[in-house]
Length: 359
Image 1 (tube, rainbow, N blue to C red):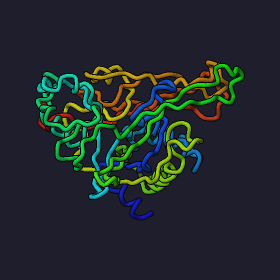
Image 2 (cartoon, one colour):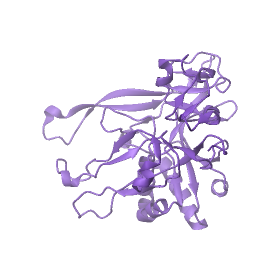
Image 3 (cartoon, rainbow, N blue to C red):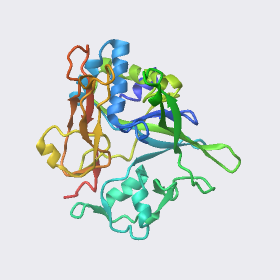
Image 4 (cartoon, one colour):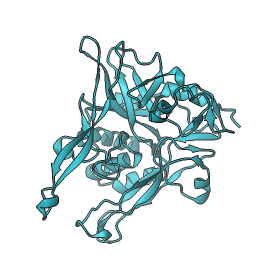
């Protein structure tokens, strides 16, 4: 407990590593049963931790307050690879929503990249030009594998060529046991599975996991409660279909992470879902995509008033030209007989783009 606790007491940025067993499966919905996310969005993490606060301490609203008052800020959870031999980690981030001046050589390959390593991001950020919202970094200098992942050529220490992704989508048939009409009880659901990399001796050399970033300004008592809830998160799991063994985590590790800058320049990239708190905050977002979140039922199926309200969020990888905080959004159903309110986390987690003297 002491070592685990002390690791979150420093002032450096913390990474919360969600270590998974090889072959672990997750159902992280993305709006439908057949759409699945390769990111555990920050609002999903927020809901999972809030539920644990309520389960353990009966203080779900207290966790919401800590997030709402910026005492806890979390990113979405992104993939990472653990080097089994060295014990080091390769952290992946979403590809920034900027242009690349030297991307002609890659052509269509550049558009397929979804994740870049932290070290690659730092190179891209160093070459960031705010005037053209582009980077001078040449993406052809990166090693791209499985189309979607890009990193520096010396980062992945494996001799064999990697063609398959380490996050693999699988479609499973399901049966809805509570459907009155059996004709539409059969359906398909997409899930993701974490696939390790093997060396030429058929031994695991890289294990895939998830991680998210944390900024906090908690007092001693609040830290202890938060750490306890992170530990319970490993047992409770994340995402849907946990009754079938999906979404479980082997271990939660808190580790200091270097190489990620806080909001120290005029331009930043968002590493969470974000819901601007005002029109002026929205105006500061200059390159972005939107995603619709919420709408699921927490009452009787078919009753619209029992559904969570939907909210649009700015997605991970979006670029801003000034600081934003975002907000926690009340998405409670319109009926008022539920004991607790329902919230979605739209607080923005930011990292800098460009050099510190970027104008």
